[in-house]
Length: 267
Figure 1 (tube, rainbow, N blue to C red):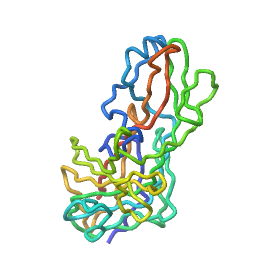
Figure 2 (figure 1 turned 180 degrees about the vertical axis):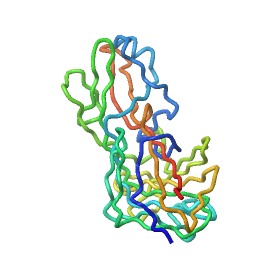
Figure 3 (figure 1 turned 30 degrees about the vertical axis):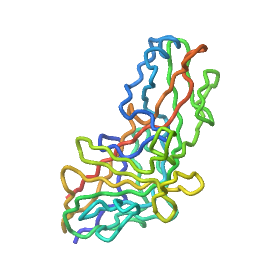
Figure 4 (figure 1 turned 45 degrees about the vertical axis):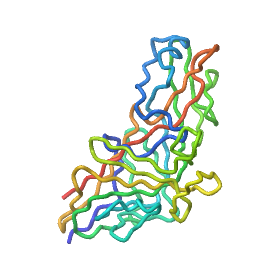
């Protein structure tokens, strides 16, 4: 049997949306194109916000795996009965999904799943996102700060942390979400440290985000499988930009956006 080469490569590429921003800004935002616009024109053109590629998009991964049978989080927790973990790290590993460099997960925390045809993939991650970035209009460069607020007077991009406790707009608690896309259907819940869904969306309880997705094409692990490759992207999507609605115009704040993920096997 060939050894599974998992440290998985986290390569910036195309895939399946898995993470949602904390304030539930639209996942279908237009890509920002601001370089020829004044601050006032930017605020008018993108009144509902737009999306950019962040300079940093940092997440903490605790566990990934493959499953057979039904949705492993349909019961409000992660049911591993029909699952095979491919990566487990109780301390979590921090990875930056921005940029073009590959990131390798700790090989000592990885294992090969049993040969099978898997109809689900899952991931457990922290509910926090480390973000920074900027956008330039014809008048100013607007940068992230240590909070979500934007600044046109800073000389460098500040890093802020966004915490996901709710998939809704803030008017009511939405502790779960799902979306159907070209590569499959994604489901996600916010949970406590024991991976139980918190239906109150309490910031004092929630520490994890658990996602499960059913791909249009199942994952087949055979005796000859040598690697499971996890591919992410945040290009033109990983950071939301919210304009100022009144003078002084420009950028009011930045927020998180969804990243995308795809699992492929290597023979």
